[in-house]
Image 1 (cartoon, helix red, strand yellow):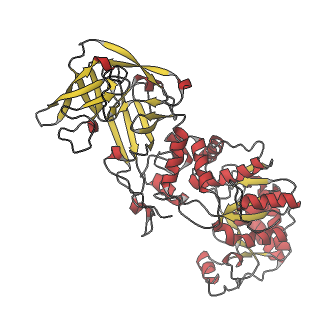
Image 2: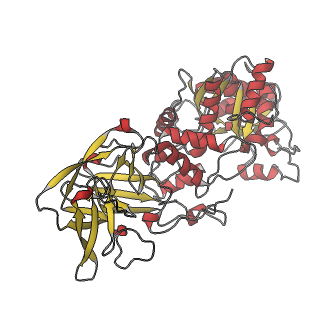
Image 3: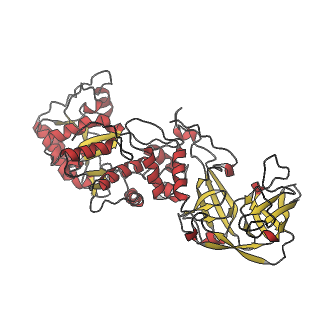
Length: 568
């Protein structure tokens, strides 16, 4: 298979897909087999979503298969919880591995036999050098490393020690198995890398059967070979590992010869996609968990109400390239809006209620209005709205002394109530502290449906809910988790956390139709943004998460404008 990058000219293609297609066309591969190999030590994030869409997408497009394989070689950090969440996330994104669910631990016995093969052929040795001394002996990028004094052990001694390592005779860190390659290599990964380490730890799948575990570099390529992977696609940080990947394939009697290809990992502004940092966020309780809607995890994004189609669209827009870059988080927001706009039902919700009293509307009387569920889709149907003397509107939709071009409610100003009537503000009612607590208004009975028979125009249409049947709700407004586009650029990323990334509004009122909303399904709160019912909701306590704001109101309801000067 070729190791070149052909510039793609076809829309929707990329250099990885071009390489795979070229291999098929030239007969270097008869079919396509890819894999997605996460370590089950955390939840998947946006960067993993890019890899999932690429690996599963290539296989789907070309009639091949994609394996889901867990790189479970470090039992200290791995949990079944994470393995379950990974499978759930991959399926939610729209992909399936069929019968090809694998674990590196499935191959532990075979990997061990191959490690002995390297010893017998003189290509591996057991090293007793302490970790700190070993790091010192590796040299630097400008200075060659030094051979370990244990590099010259006999095959027989190495086999004996390695078997005793497996039998559990030695403590953690006492010995390692290293490949015997070249301590003077310009590639640090070829300076006698560690292949096995002693680790007395209970493994989630193999229990206490093993006291030694293979490193990622040893397990990964050989697992690819066992599974007959044709194209091992990974991110650029593994580019320098490729010579080791190839060296091991060449020096072992593996059943196939996969090849590794690299692409640029995903970086998003105002976001960290380091599992180490995400783990800290959870462990130090900066967020409520891995699925906190502020987290860039697939679980968190799903909880926000983002459809899988929107995430796939975002990944498609980002594309696949070799060069590192940072994607503006606004691109993700745009993909979410573009996906939700044609499908999300419209509803009315008042986040900061202000009572509106229509003084010329009969007391005790209500009427039913008809509201469209979607302005551009008649097939979405209609729903009933209760209209009465007392309503609630947004506090931000009233100003007692408005500036120019403020077209909403103020004394003497007439506006349209969505699906209802024209109303005119007559007076603001204040409490003892001078705070406006209600508006006294009048309405035009002839303007039912929001149109005036005399043709007069108003410059604002407001959303509202009726006091008679509005449903109380909590609304959680999420902003960027970090307050700078490049978290950690000056040090610790967590020092750049945004202390105002969550604003919980507990006194909201929503229309009755929202009481039957499905958990996780986004709806549009008219004039406000897209929101989704949170799993924390109960029949007596609705909780909504903001999925994304509208184009013209992003962060407006936070009371501050989010800056978009993003590093790209």
